[in-house]
Amino acid sequence: MKPMMSGLTAMLAATLTMVVGAEQGVFDEYRAMMGDDNPAIFVIDEGEEYWFEPAGPNQVTFEQCDLGLGAGVVEGAYAQLPRYFSDADQVMDLEARLVFCMVELQGRTREQIHAKPYSLRGDLGTEMEALVVWIAEQSSGTAVAPAQDHPKERAMYSLGERLFYYRAGPHDFSCATCHGQADKRIRLQALANLSTHEGAAEAYTTWPAYRNSEGLVRTMGWRMRDCFRQQRLPELIMGSEASVALQMFLAVNAAGADMAVPGLKR
Amino acid sequence: MLKHLLIAWFLVTPVSGLANSAADSLIDSMTAKNQATMDRLQQDEVQRLCSKSRAEEGGSDALAATREQAMKRIEYPIDGQYLGDWASGAKVASNGRGLQYSDDPEAPNGGNCYACHQLDPREVAFGTLGPSLTGYGARGQSEPVIKYTWVKLWNTHAYNICSHMPRFGAQGILTEQQLKDVMAYLLDPDSPVNQPIDVLNE
Amino acid sequence: MAGRIRIRAQQKGDVTEVKALMRHPMETGQRKDQAGEPIPAHFIEEVTVTHNDTVVMHGYWGAAVSANPFLGLRFDGGVAGDTVSVAWIDNKGETGNGKTTIR
View 1 (cartoon, rainbow over the protein chains, first blue to last red):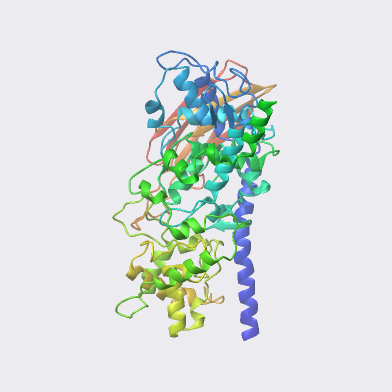
View 2: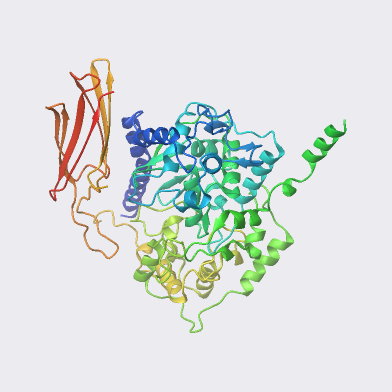
């Protein structure tokens, strides 16, 4: 009886492993069926509209907004961010740069922009999400190449690395708690090891993404904000120094991998 | 020439002068929301000591001293009872809510054990950040086992300094009763954690 | 918000490619809420895609389709400038619709 039972238990363990492995396989199959389709296409169209629509008290479009490759140049811009901008004397990620253009070019206020940058559940999407995904899509297929020439750019990477390992809050979580090792998962969600090139590339090249569970496009900045919420920490301000530093950390670790956006996620 | 010397000096000086420390940066970059207040960003000794990359982790006197401190500060149940109700413990183990700014501060916190551990072998949705605890009760309920398990839950750093497991007792995440219920979930022979799957009947 | 459909229709040679994103909870009726109470079924039962005045697709959906359905289809006989509309009706009798011009 005993050998039979242990044999059956082994079979069951194998089946359970297959079920768990199948979870990953099922989602991969789903992605393959979708092909190039992605519900984010609608939000991308909206982003394009926002770029060319006069807004703010100055009633100006984004066409004079310099994302690092010259005023109005969007193709390839996402892949070279974050970077130092001399007009702001700061290193900026895309969201920080868009806020800068909204304020400086269009005359909008930070309070207005920060009042609701990201969608809440049930929303149809925000202007920032639409702009980010439209801009990022025009870097799809381009290699991630954030600048590391300026001392402030290198300092941002260094800060991002320190933030990555910073343990805090009632649960003592850092980013590294979940994202510091390979081949781990939280419940059934696989976790990328963001401290390595492979893991950082897997993550950084697939945001912004359409999230099926929410029916919304989400950005890298939003994903970090939501991580901090789950780490029991306060709310990360969009485009803030910590947001830029962590995105620099990921982008530099991912450098060389091609952007593959919009992503498609659960 | 001078300009090149200045640039060279600038490049080799520590970058800390060019950007905030991690703590200062977070204070500038975050805003309090609901129960997630800014004081959560202040690190205590364990957090400060353990905020290192894996490459930097290693034995040191500070680590050993902190581990001993953690052990000294463990709080044990005054009534001497360590085992509560495993069915309630199962709920604590499955509940992933508590202390986030999206959570109701009046609702009980969960332990979210399944985020990282396997427990009941019938539960497929378990994480792998921590070891499997299936069949934990096989080690019996001797005093050393009870004490070891309680200490691990209260403050894991007493045994395993810089572990990434939260300090469920020391940080006030779970109440004493919740901890006792989780103890029962782990140690009670009737708990599903300790019931092998009945392959012929389940 | 309820009933809104985003549609894109592109002419590719002889074929019109339509993609539509519908906002709908597509509740199966099997799920339970936090209190353990069943969440009532609420899902799209029928979808119709029309090209000018001709129905090119009529589908019977149900609980197996996930939330916020993303529909893609191709049909022939269309040209740029024609109208494509999508309409649905769910098990509660609620409806949604939208239309676009083929580009």
